[in-house]
Amino acid sequence: MPEIDDKLPARSGLQFEEPVIFELPSDPDTGTAAADLPAQMAGVQPRTAPLSIGNLPEYRVVRHYTRISQWNYGIETGLFPLGSCTMKHNPRINEQIAFWDAFAQLHPAAPDQWAQGALQIAVELEQALCEINGMAAFTLQPAAGAQGEFTGLAMIRAYLQDNGQAESRRKILIPETAHGTNPASAALAGFEIVNLPPQSGAVIHPDEIRPHLDDSVAALMLTNP
Image (tube, rainbow, N blue to C red; front, side, top):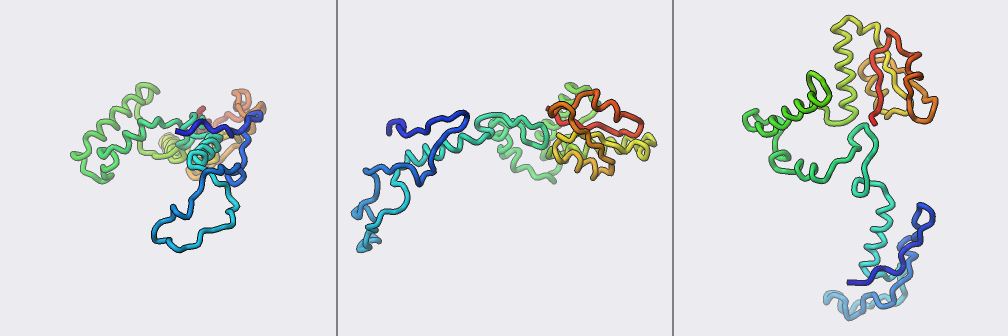
């Protein structure tokens, strides 16, 4: 096993410094000799002029790309803090369970008697969400954040229609810092959008919302967290 690379990049502030792989110094003891060429290439004249790339052993190439890949922020090294869509922390065990044949091979149109296990999980999850949030019912149908937003807005619209307020309560209050799907979902659901510019940083305070609250407002959309 090779020793730890002695050519690790120096750290400057919060940013690593590392040259591109073509600029890394070559290792003189690596390379392919003519005698190492495959038999079918016998008689082929080996290249005499050096290539304009570094002559590096495999372990140094792997370390190079591993280091620069770790500069990126991803699920392997941290959580996704954004609360909309599906960019949240999905533990690896969840993905492993989702790939079980019992789930992955279950056809959406399968008869109920063939899907009792999946249906039981869905029912118990809905009951748990209702108990945690104090709501009468939950839907597990939306498969993405934007779809969930539209589903919620459609439910708001149906409630207002049922109460005869669909024409009078048409405004949706949305902070300008919200995800772009928020105003798109509201517009698709047939509402009017009222943008709320933040007055102090990226956080909307109650005092900034209060002047907009009247009988024409149908809902307030806030990204959580």
